[in-house]
Image (cartoon, rainbow, N blue to C red):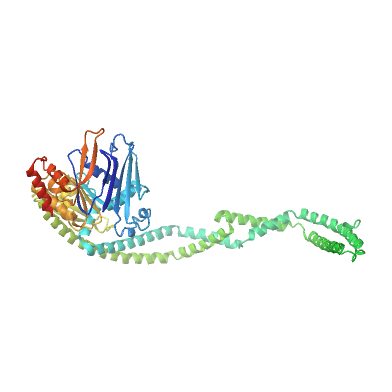
Length: 560
């Protein structure tokens, strides 16, 4: 249901707000007053292209915004999931917006956030079904006609559609898996050889976590072995002496001996003597350790060469498989998994072939059941609509619904497509509705369909001058039918006939002020005497005509 429609600077309208209600809403006004603004605004909310010159002269941009109730069950539709994620949590409404600049550029908005025209086409098409003299997109699209037939089948047909789509999806998934397996067959041996070679290369390397750091440290030590030995030897001589001098150790020993005779006379000096003796012992240990280091280090060209080769191999594997030893080891595990899968590919291929054969039977059974339900629903729907057309000024017209099998077998929506066929006059051959019917005929066929349960209850029905070219009793019949269709849904009709307007639950009128520069139109809700006056105007009479006023009252009263 459309709760609010806000329009700014669109054609003649500077600013307008409409709050349509449940049931039948009509928009009336004199010819040229701008009734088509509503049609333009709704088409923009449905993602339609902005027509040239729709921005009010002198305005920088036009703006249209529609607030709709969020239909139940939408959150379960995968096609809508991404768009609905932009809405506030637990939101019960959805706001679509469209802005058109004076230069013709457009912007789309969903829930106050930037969107695309494609988003509006997806969501707007689920919220509004628009039918006018040149807008019959839903009725003339083959998939929509098939959906109407299924909708006419009620809940049993809905279950059949669900069963078929499930079977079709599972069969398609299995066929895609088989195709993938067959493609892999052609490259299986090549892939096996590659994975086995890479796995053997990694396993032969026997890599260890942290190995690189240890190897690099040892390599640096071997590369500078002579420098390290000389440094250790020089330090050892400085500490322990070289035969000609005592070194630091001898000097420190003499200091300790000189202090020994003074121990016991002053506690302050005693602590310093202890420190000197400790340093002497530490110096002796350090000299011994340096001597051992000096004697133990030596150049090993063969070991250095081995380290260089090992590190080069690790570098090569890391470059090939991810940049680290951990990545190389992970790639080895992936190779093992792929080898196992490829070696057992033939078994899986046979399993999938058997699965496909079973799913083909299930899909065929579901398609046959779905087709039988469609034949029954199509015959009933066509008969009922044909019966309604006579009351809608199409006496003798016959609607039939052909179910045509697909040449290439069952598709996503079943084994057939639906084609609505219309013979507008007796003795004429039935032809596809989209090719033969005039705008008014299409609108009236749609009105006849709208009164049936065709699975379209969540959409707002909009009829743009459905009454064009009719009058008298036919206009009254169209008004009555619109009223019936709107009994449990929201319908918006743009009309110029009093017989239709008098049936409305909510009446809006558009009035143009031609004296303004530029001309301006406004929209207001009509009640009471204002509504009587508008219907009298639609009857072609002035305010002084008591007969027209009485007739207008009778028309309004006849609805109750």
